[in-house]
Image 1 (tube, helix red, strand yellow):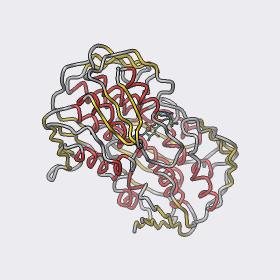
Image 2 (cartoon, rainbow, N blue to C red; image 1 turned 120 degrees about the vertical axis):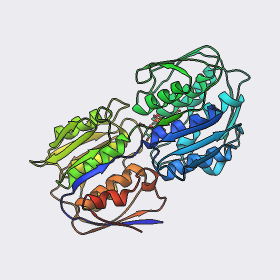
Image 3 (cartoon, rainbow, N blue to C red; image 1 turned 120 degrees about the horizontal axis):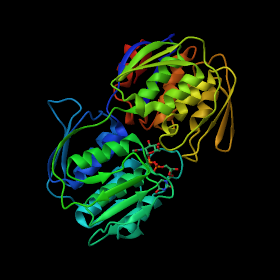
Image 4 (cartoon, rainbow, N blue to C red; image 1 turned 45 degrees about the horizontal axis):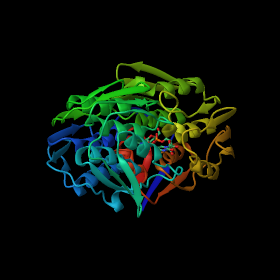
Length: 418
Ligand code: UD1
């Protein structure tokens, strides 16, 4: 079990370089299932979730490993793929379910366990399944496994009831090798979807419209092995903006695509955080304290649910009453009770958290329920008076933050991960 010891140590200062996007890298690594030969992916963060998807690829018979000589590079040698994905890995991380699309496209058959992942709601996979059915797959669920079969996938028009990131990715990957044209309507528009489409197009796919509500995929016979570099992680960047802002510090977040953080940065400005953008850098400062604001999570380009816990922390220390409404996941307020143990004044009403700002938090022992809740608790520890001890039984924080301890120490934080 991981324990993180943090002592509130005043404002953070300095520069932090952002790693590659975990969620983009996970989808792109899954997409290498479609490609024969050697593929090289750069700017891949060194994280527990990435190690899990690498283990999934290996279990499918693919050789995949971090390069010994080039940092943050994963090399994949793929000749053939098995169609059964292992229960112990897929149930560890929900993102590994996305492999169902590429395995089906490559083999005509896939057997993948129903997924696990963060404890933030029931998170079904009905939309992935509906999408694959629209392409002509026959689906059955047996003994906890989803079994999909199609002698041939045929392009189709498919409307997503909700713009699910994972379902958009699974269907896009499967449609890449389908016969004819597929149109995904009400598709997710996240930057990670665009990155996956750019990767697939570089490998020879024909995808247009990624980043909009309608994605058109014209099937091709095969994809070719390529080299590709993953986009920066917008949620890691947003988390460090909050870490600087909540401590009243000042610093620079570099190696980011600021447009990917637009809704987050606008909300931070509304709260009173000074934000200046210069090329791939965000300069963060706080001059006059923080003020309350209302936040509603939405699919991209709306405010990201993955920044909700961090924003809840910031609003806990803002002057006035704020309301956060979570519309993407039905059970994503587990961090609130931990904040309350540190002195926060928050009431939960259904899908909303009503936050009355407090002047300060006090260090306490707290528990991590999911990845972003963990990140928010680390930020809380940075600003709380005294020591905060964060118990991260399932290593959630390591799933999403590369070199967290070193990056925060470089900003002046007193943090120790044991
Ligand atoms: C991805 C991200 C995750 C982020 C989330 C929303 C990855 C690896 N993870 O997760 O960090 O929090 O997008 O931005 O990219 N849903 C269904 N049926 C389905 C699929 C989803 O009802 O078949 C629901 C989910 O329960 C949830 C909502 O749709 O309430 C959003 O889920 P989705 O966009 O699919 O999230 P993920 O792809 O799992």
